[in-house]
Image (cartoon, rainbow, N blue to C red; front, top):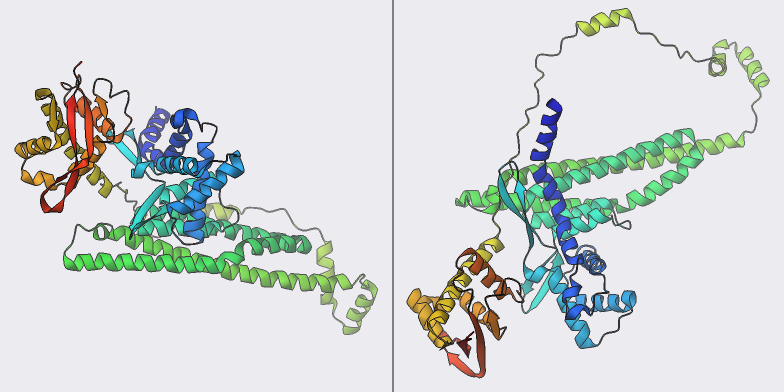
Amino acid sequence: MAEQYLISREIVEEHYSRMMHIRKYYPFFKLAEGTLLQFKDGKYADLDMGYITMAVLRFFIEENNFKEKDVTYEELEDFLDEIYRRDFDLNLSYEEEHELSTYIFDKIKNDGKPFSFSFFDPVMHVKRKMRIRLIEGRMDGDTVYYSITTDGLEFYLDTKELQDESTISIEQLLLEKMIRSRNFKGGAEVVRRINNEVKKLQIQKNEVLGILSRNVFEGIKISEQFMKKTVRWFDEEQKLFEKNIELIRMALSKARDDEMAGDYNSQYFKAFEQIFSLDKELKRALNKHRELLEACIDMQKTADDLVAKAKIRSLRTAFDFEKMCGSFMKQDRTDKFESFVLPLLKPNINKSFGVKMIDELLSFKPQKDDVSEKIVEQLTEEYIFDDEIEEGRIQNNFYCFLHCLFDMLLDKDKFTVEEYMDYLKTCYNDSITKSGDLYIFLVHLCQKSNYDLSCIADNKDTFLEGVMAEYLQNYNDKYAAISFSVEVFSDVIIYLDEGMEITSFNIIKKKG
């Protein structure tokens, strides 16, 4: 029964952490499976989308982390064009290459939205939703710059370490991204990995010293390899440590400023304890790293001394015991024979355990001031991301626009966009025409000329059709038999309040 309980406990309590670990692999397999089969009737199906995805991530790591610069779409497109020609012998025209690269990059960044999937949390008995991005973008003036996310960087490093770079440096770059994105809890996990790497190097250093003590010349070879692999990265690693400590110091300062200002809802103030803990962990890791550097320098000095002694010993090909014995006799120092005799005697390898020691063990009492360590369970916090709030608002507004659109189609066979906007004002208020989501909705609506709600669940070609299908499934299916077309008049402009203007179009219900 106890064994069965332990198994059940492991399954239930560790499921969430396992899902958090494997979530970073989800986008890759979603992209690799059949992504290019849907494009141009499978014209480029021979291209390996998995390989292209990994190549793009490596390109971003090189540009973002090693060269410390963001990437424009034009630079990425040149990189992809080189892959088509070099790896797939595919020579495309500029229009074909541009169209294919745009499609592939849109898929990798998931049209600007995070990849998401749901799973069951057996502890809380609720369904949770995971969100992962591989690439993120930012506007600077009129240009969009792209960079790899922490999830994308972690995924690539999990598949295979970058052998040409220091593992500690790579983890430090990942830590920097997490601090800048205010993921302080994830940063603590990265620091633990850095500590493990430092500990691994310390163990390797001790192994090298052990080999040096047994075989100097073999140890020198291994020592040179270790120093060449490890020490050459110390300067860069120290700079990254200091850079991340400065970022944490700025985050602590921001949290204290928010506390003084009474802004208790700020992300920095809420994460104050996590920032403070991360600061302590990183400083501890920095001290261990410095200790490792000092130990490596001492090891190099020890190796040099051993080599010098080995060279001196190698010059003496023989030892005259008779001459040395005569020298001791002249000095009347028989005690010096000890250094010659003891190595020749058999060492005493038999050990015994005294009976009195058993009594001491049984009567041993621990100190009263020993206090056991109190383990505080860390609770996982749920965060609501800014883009989740935006997506919820847009979806709710689109549902309102669709409800009014479908109601008018039930009553009328044809109406203009002006009549539709007047109906929206009647249902809500005049300020609805000032909503930016309304004009985004109209742009999406005009992407296609024909809509059939009866089969829209199976054929969702556009983003708006996906929203329509969700609306019909979740709220109301009385509109399921409607089909309509959009007739756009590109040469007719409608002028609205505050200098705004839109292209005129009509909505026409089909009779079936």
